[in-house]
Amino acid sequence: MSAALTLQCPGCGRTYETWTWRCDCGGPLDFASELRPAAAEPPTSWADTRAGLWSFADFLPVDARVSLGEGVTPLVDAPGWDAAFKLEYVSPTGSFKDRGATATLSVAAALGVDHVVEDSSGNAGAAIATYAARGGIDADIYVPASVKPAKRRAIERAGATPVPIEGSREDVTAACVDAVEAGDAWYASHAWNPAFFAGTATFAYELCAQRDWTAPDAVVMPLGHGTLFLGAYRGFRALADAGWIDEPPRLLGAQAAGYAPIVAELHGERAAAGANDVADGIQIREPVRKRQLLAAIDATDGDAVAVSAAAAERECDALHQHGFYVEPTCAVAPAALEVYRERGVVGPDDDVVVPLTGSGLKTQ
Image 1 (cartoon, helix red, strand yellow):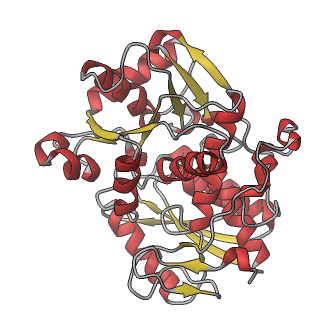
Image 2 (cartoon, one colour):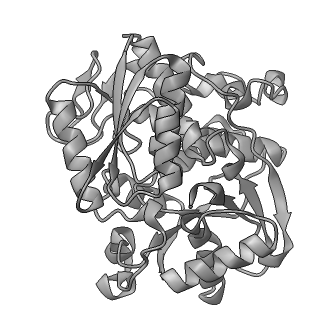
C-alpha cells in the first residue's frame, strides 16, 4: 500500500500500513497525512477542467482509476433565495455522492479489490454500484427494504446486488458490517471510508475555483453522516492552509427533525424534536464521525438546525417551480437557510452558497 494510503485513527493515534475499515479502538480512520500543494498559488493546470474533479489530483490520494467525468458542477445564482446554488444533482448518478464514489473505487482499484459492499438509503448505494461497474468490481449494496424503487433500480441496472434489510437505517448498517466482519468484501462505506471524504472535499476546491479563489461567507448543507459537510470542511481548511483562500466559510447544517443528533448536541433535545420522514437520505441517528462534525462546526463558527417534513416539502415544491428538480432530502438545506436568516445567523449581506445535492429523478 502506498504511503499516501497509510491510515491513522484521530481518536487513539494508531496507524495502519495495510488497509482496514476501522481502528481496533472502534473509531473511524483517516489518511495519516493530508495532501497539501507545494505551490504558493493554484497551478494553471487547474483552469483545465476536462478531468472533472480529478483536476484537483494534488489533493487526492490516488490516480483517477475509476471515473465518469464527475465534478465541475454548475454554480448558479438563485435570486429567490438570495444565494448561489451549486448543482451537485447533475452528477453522473444524480447526487454529490459521485465525488466520494470515484475516489473510493479508485482506491479499491489501486489495492486490487474485486468485491465491495456498502450500506445506503439510496444515493450512495447507486453511486458505489455505478462506479464499481465502471471499475469492473463486484458490489453488494445493503439498503432499507423501503428504499425508493428508482434508487433500487439504479443499483440493479449497474449490475450490483441490492440486499434489502427490514428495520431501521441502523439495522441496515449492522447487517453490512456483519458481512464485512465475515471477510466477504471491502467496505466502500460513505461514512467510514476516508477515501470518500477525500472525494467530497473536491466540492470546496471547485467552489472556490469557480469564485476566483474566494470563499463564500457561509455554506448551508444537508447533514446526516456528514459526508459532504465534513469533506467540504477539510477542503476549505486545506485551501486556507495553502494560502489560496483567507479562511473557511461558516458551515451550517440542515438535519431532519427527529433525526438530528448534531442539533441535539448543540441546542438540546427539544430543538431536535419533531418528524421528517421525507428526507430519507439524512435519517441518521448516530453519525460515525459525530465528534469530527462537531469540531468542524466549532472551528468555522457554524451551526445546525432541524427541518420538519412540511418545511422540506414546501421548499422542494418551490425549488421545482424555479427549475431545480431535486429530491426532498436536498430541500432541507435551502429550508434551513430561511431559518438561519430569521435567527440572524446569516445576515442580509452575507454571501451564501447552498449545494443542491440530489436529483428528483430518483424519488419515484
